[in-house]
Length: 119
Image 1 (cartoon, rainbow, N blue to C red):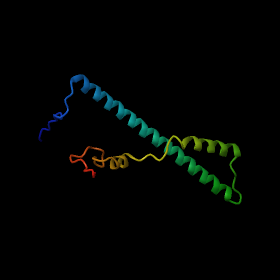
Image 2: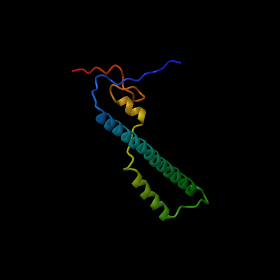
Image 3: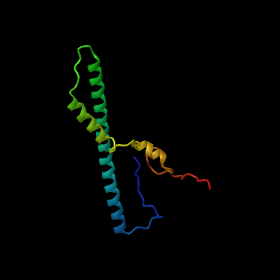
Image 4: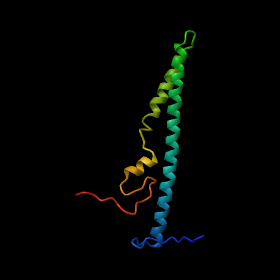
């Protein structure tokens, strides 16, 4: 097994304080991104469950002896769906954001060869 060594980029001249602050900022941003992703998945799950419930209500009400949901329940489902929409606009996935970022691979890591811009 070969040993792998990690070296700092010689182009970056950072003292210990700046390096620690940079590391802290990266860790904080990582935690925020993780939380954001978890919250986005939760909101999308709520929206999906509401959509499925509404479809089930419609098919049940369309049956000859089907039961119709009470108006209060339908109204509260409407309110919950309206509340969940603005908080979760169409957010691109992590892979889509990486593809949209010039100079990065699909996994988000920086490319060795930056893109060439036309002027």
